[in-house]
Length: 504
Image (cartoon, rainbow, N blue to C red):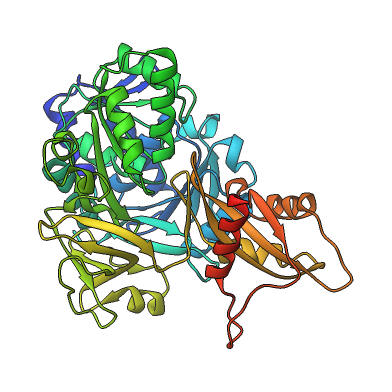
């Protein structure tokens, strides 16, 4: 089972079918896309890469991204998608930890990245040269072979590499058809969210369906641009964090733009408040569906479809809007007590999931794998409750992750950087509610005795070590951090302090 079989199938069956647009311009049909992927695969293998080897992609959304994904799979290689928002030092660590021999970059984010066997800028002649090889026959892969090595931040301060197999991702795609949305060849998937994350993973069901793909000229999210593409290409589909949905709705309300060209907007990656989705439905119509998943079970724990969102007459409609829907077809979901026993409807516990979408484990981290995968279940770290109809509502996170604009930010990563400043004695990072971003990072900082430090110095430190989006949006300077008898910082007390300040 090789994910690239789907591309080969469409290319053989209907080679002239439009495949990839850059803005409104058609670049390649499916026959050309498959041929380019096969030629790239041939060049990679000719340079010594063998099935199972890793290739890093550190670039913003770009027309080359889609063909690189399928070229790697065509050659039997494992894709290591690196978040383009990361600092190059963070990306470099991922390349080294994954053992990626080659890296493909765009100069705007990856010019300084070094891979041991070669770093290729997709906009330079060296990349075009890789397309000159004769096509490689499709490489056989087992269903359990790795296809996608995704690095998601961990509470230890270092990212963990989630290993996803060809079976994991194929099952995810089939769940999309069954539980999220039917896909037509006339649909157009827009890559507005990062292709290193869910935006790129959703290429798989759209390739299976032989649908169209478009990389916006901006290379990212621009509400006006997406509205224009929805009108020029039609039946526009995309994955969007709640922050993106809000901006689309703001644009629709401010400009009275026609939203009829949007076919499906799948939102997820962070909580969406019921009031916000109600506003979105009023402004843009019933083109929305919600998914809940995580890197370890990508996009595939539960789904709230457009039928539920539209069923305003149901007596539990308000509650369902606040939920993340029902479990997807290929998984089992349990809300469990700390010992793993299922809890009755309505009781809050940790969300567990098992099925063919769940990762094979963490790369080179047996301890973390054993902690996350127990008795066949993935322990998500999210707290929630199931109602009697099977709808899952998330209550809180047992982990301290801050979700800002759909991006996960783990406090310890930020804390460790801030503690590099010689004037900082201790620090604790929490998330604060924010109407635009969902949450923003707030750092409580206690200076060393006799020292002082300001926000500008801490900002500069963060910008030198971690991605810009992870740095605190606010600093609270305190004499000391509140702690319990064991010396553990009481983040609940810090949250209460923030709440009091906001009401002052």
